[in-house]
Image (cartoon, rainbow, N blue to C red; front, side):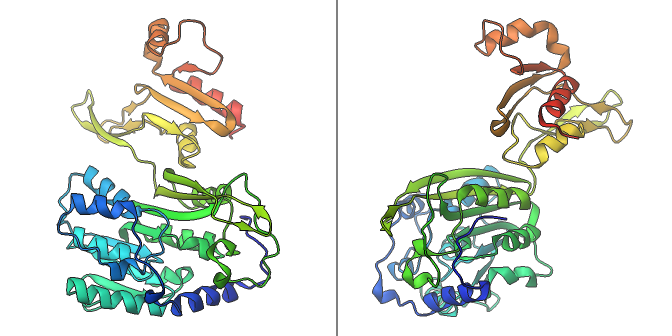
Length: 385
């Protein structure tokens, strides 16, 4: 279980407090957000509209939109591609508003708890883009708790984004599990949120507080380590791609720190796709991992244990290809950082070490030659059965 703050409130009370706060929100009482990435987007997409009236309705903490765009561009596909995007807890739909302009043929769903924000955002879509929400124009707003997004029955999403929403939900484990089920096997989830830093003391005496006492008092904020564990246990891969540390205020006489992060989350670790020729004449497809961090995915160590990492089998003749791709493996929590080379290169050990900048005998565990040699070491080192 993750460590949340004991607020003395039930999950329903917490949810109602969040809904009441945003349902009473009035845009005339705030200023338009001026995050730097807006200007960057306008440089890349000169026709994009970013109206101040909608920027007044944003509550994001980082920028999952640009990370989504960068990921999409890496696939060399046209922006006119048809795809599905879920904005989980998107409020008035500011991120959805940007994405619909960049990906005109995308079908976008924005799910949020606040009817007020969704209504305000719908008016912005109509006013600035001429898009009537929920009218078959590729933009759909749904008023719901993220704890109930299992109502999507026949949709799997290419992309999911969430920007400063899950920190306001008590049952993050359930939400992450539901979102994992909605993500396509090759899809990406960009999660931007806030958590207490590792070295921070959570605020004390939060009983009875709700969102109106201030976002940083929210009793549903948890520690970044606990958040990372929840993601790790719900998905097959997670990498923090943007992170900031902030000290927003002093509460109760004790300063505490926050981590604002954006993670790229997937069901399986990303790999390079290659084909290799088999002596039988068949071409064998292979997923290649050149850099492996065991803390980014629960699947890496299991793949090594099952002899599936950088391995393939010819569908025609059954020949197994293994132990021919060098890779770097690290597991910081276990103090393991090592290079694994094919056993066929063992006689070139000295030359390989020199290329790695090592001219004396390295410490044990620094380099291995052969899949089985490293696999046996890993099993012994981690007591993996």
